[in-house]
Image (cartoon, rainbow, N blue to C red):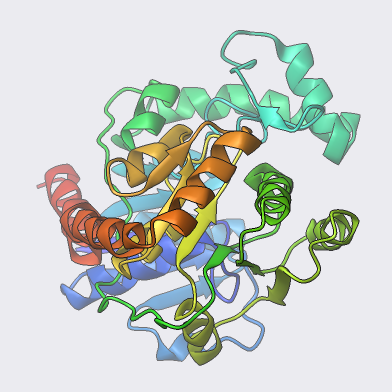
Length: 379
């Protein structure tokens, strides 16, 4: 079987969608599938030759047309417009994995920029002026108009594909697309990460520092705990456009002695930091489609404290602490529970790992995709 995976973003870029494509391609290749990943992402210093599958970077239209023609199955990481059109024109079985809301939202996030809050669904409700205003804040009016106009054919095309693959049941309901089958993300199975027993109670956010993640909420909650006299540390592991603002906010709230920004970490440096983290906090204010980071930490046996929003609440369900998104008092209460009842770290950490092993294993994700492909492949 020949599978073409098209990803708008791929290694060396780092993120949830990029990780998904890499793991899926590696897993399929290990099962004997001939996989080609096509992407507009430049190679830079990344070693494509080290991968067990073929990578075609920055293909022109003619090359992409040829790649689609050679494939038995086309897998799209998101409803990417051009390869979606080419695949349907060539009458290929197409599977579209939905890691965002691009089929029903011009910016794909269901995040309303003017107010920095979750969008109630203006596009689906035909309140198009709100969509224009939302994206004009970050992209300007002309680009905002283009984003809006492209959403109409994108949604229509997604109704024509062989199968839509939402990554959670929440996304399934939100998109409302025909021929949909939920396939959860999968992460490599790893041993439970040991926790330093003598470490100061440490909370951490691990990921991109962007506005939709609700990170000011975490600083506000930390301020409350400090004023109440609790001893703890708070780490921001990652980088992004909001870092400078968050650093200034930490100073303003007099949290310099409690908060540390580590920057982006990988490998041994990340493992060393993770060994001191008692709970990972994900205070998102947008409707997270899944929460790959939550799955990774759950697989490590870490307690996750998350906003009960979107697919994130679904992923953590029953195996962590959840709070109302945007509610500082509710988040502070969760943090306070951990500080006052240290046994929650191990008890809920064990439940998190058990849930991850049951639902979020890499091998399960790959096999479910392969089963879908076998059903779609023309005889």
